[in-house]
Image (cartoon, rainbow, N blue to C red; front, side, top):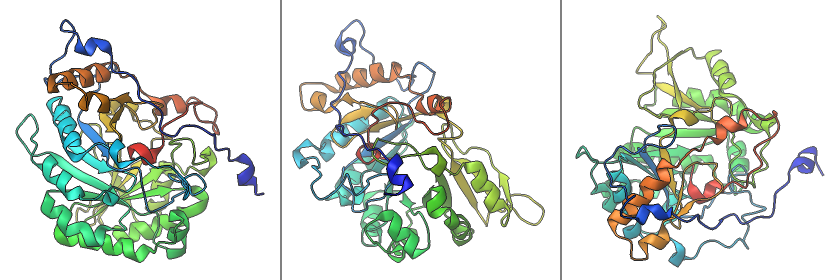
Length: 386
C-alpha cells in the first residue's frame, strides 16, 4: 500500500442525497414573489448563470471527478425516468431567465452522452433574455464525441464549447482519464468545433501538482495564438470520492509564474461580472497585451475564493437546484414540475430559494488547516457539473 493510499479515505455515503423542501412561503399569496430579474441572495449576489446537468454518466474516469473505484460497472446510475425531460428542462430554464439568467451551460457527466441533446439545445435557443437577446448557450465536454457531434450542435443553436483537456502528453492524458482514451481524438474534436464555429473555444486543464504540472508549459505553447482561451483550474475538493489533498493543489499564482518564465504575461480586467477566471494576456515586445497571441485564465477557487461575486445556480440531472458547487443538498424542483405547480409557483420557489442563499464554501475552506477540507458531505461534481 502506498503512502497516498493510506491517506485516501472514501466515505460510504449516498452520492445523490434527497432534495430539500422548497420554502412553504413561496406558495403563500402573502409572500409569493414574482419574477422581475432583480432577485439577490443574502450577500447581494444576483442570479445570472445557470448550469444544467443533463446526465450523470461519463465515458471517462478522471480521478478528480469520477474515480473508477467508485464509479465502476456496478454503480447504479439514474434511471431515464428520473432525469428531467428536455421539455421540463426548458420550462425551468424559462423560469430562471425570468429571474435574470442570461447564460446557460450544459454539463454532465459528459453531456454528449445524452441522446438527442440537439433537441434540447434547439428548445433553449428559442428563449430570450429579459432584454430580448438570445441566451448565451454553451456546453462543457471532455471532447471524446465532439468530432462527430460538432456540426449538429452548431446547427441546433449551440454557440460555444469548453473542452476539458488535462495535458498533451498522450501517456499523461490516458492516465488521467483512466480509460486509455487518446489525446489525439480530443484534439480532433477541438479542431472540428473550431471549424464549424463553436467559439471562442475554452480549454480547461485541471492541475494536480504531482500528476500533470509538467504539461502546463506545453499546453500554453500549443494554444498561444490559436484563438482559444486556455484556463488552468486548481484541483478542488469537490464531492467526497476524489481523495482530495491540499498538497496536490498547485496554486494559480505558481502556474502564472511558471508560464511567465517563458511567455511574458500581463493581467487583464474581468470581461464580465462574476467571472471565475482571472485573465492574463500574452504580451508583445513593448509589454502590452498582444491580442493576436491571446490570453490564458486561472481559476483559483482553492487559494483565492470568489464566493463574493458568484452568480451561478446549478440544476442537477434529476431536477435538484444547488446553490454552490460544494453544496451538500439541493432543492427538489422536479416534484413541482411534475406536480401541479404553475410557472408562477416555480418562479416564486426559485426566488425564495435564491434569496435565502448564503453559500460561501471556498471562503470557509480558506480558514481551515492546510491539509483539511470542511467536514461536509458534498454532492459529487459528476452529478451537478463543474
